[in-house]
Length: 288
Image 1 (cartoon, rainbow, N blue to C red):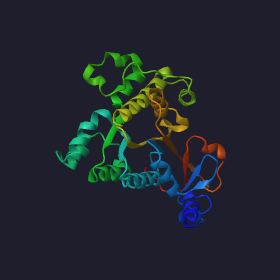
Image 2 (image 1 turned 90 degrees about the vertical axis):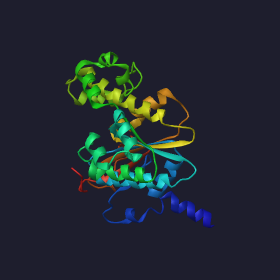
Image 3 (image 1 turned 180 degrees about the horizontal axis):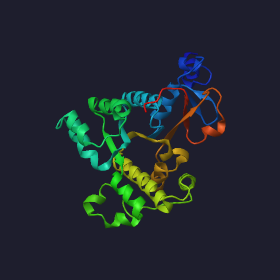
Image 4 (image 1 turned 45 degrees about the horizontal axis):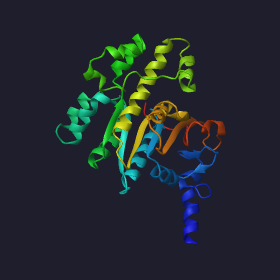
């Protein structure tokens, strides 16, 4: 009897969390069937996964808070080692991260040299500091921006001209790009022809590089939660496409963040881009 009741409570569909039962919820979590699920069920699904892609809107305070909470809960699992991957750090910054986490450089040195995003202090520092304080590995997964910019301006062949030292910070070349993927086609259409194919290549090289460094840092039995803009993992394209193209067998959970006027009234079509959708009220405070 108790186990049955516990299962119902954990499912979050019949008895959702308290924050979901308020008149003005700060957020709601949905599955693809349009059912509201609890945060507890999100944790459960994440615990069962090898790779969790938490797709964010970069200025969403709620998304960043929930990322922090999920990282903390996953790290409490003593049966598996949890790593954190972040789009917000470029691969050549890994040395700075490792030196800071190892106590070899100060926080001010790290923050002054690491080419941090403008919203680092409010949105990403809590996760970084939690990882440092609790001995979690933090992986810088993104391609150095200078190389992505070069691809946008000169095309993907420019990467071949880089030195072998520089190439260690990008995915192995050549990078295959499927321009027929809906996500990449949407990028090209939204740009109205500006940038041409190079715009798609620049995005794809980012996705391929993030997938490369995720896989490079996954050991047997490891789990990684990866923080990235939703467009890098929605519809299991972007990073996830490159992961699945390289290996098979990983249990992958995707999370998307969207904003709407009424989180309690959501079109199911808006829930299909990810396994779980974080729905945030449009009037919620943003960080920039």
